[in-house]
Amino acid sequence: MRFRVPAEVADGVRRLAAKLGHKPARISARLVEEGLRRRDHPLIELRDTAAGRVAYVKGTRLAVYWLVAAVRRLNGDVEKAANTWAIPVEKVRAALEYAAAFRDEIAADMDDADANRVLLQRSEAAFARAAGQRLDSNARGRNKRS
Image (cartoon, rainbow, N blue to C red; front, side, top):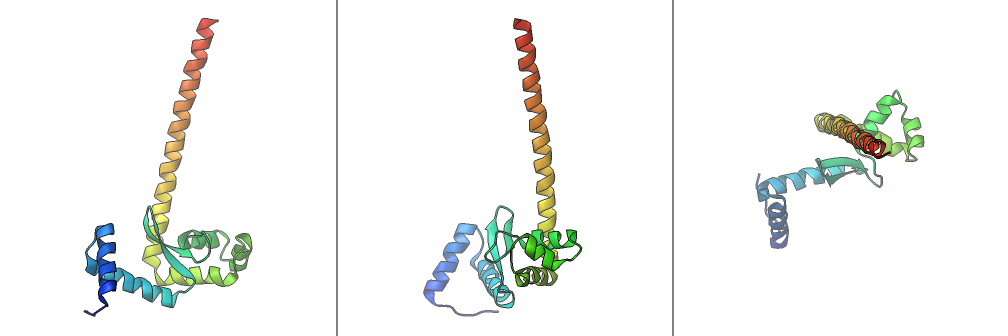
């Protein structure tokens, strides 16, 4: 598919492509796709994160994948999820609808979050062990001086 855009729009696409290290055609396709998603899911927005583009519930700090997982933990109780995070029920339903429409994307976001959680837990455990060893060696050093 080809289409024409005003010169200033084309310049903006080229600048964004250069900034992100992608070809203008790829950026154009992504922008069109995201525009369609916004039209179909107005309560969801895509944000740049360290993990890439991630869907969030508009006006909140809640990622769609996270809210979907929370609703699952609450056995599908949408009202309880809305009350727990003080957001309208419509926003919780919007997140669930988006997740249903983009299952693979949300599953990948969940997998990334799980991998990050495991990495963080391992890092914290290693730090705690290292800190404990330093404390032990410092205590041994003080005992030798006594």
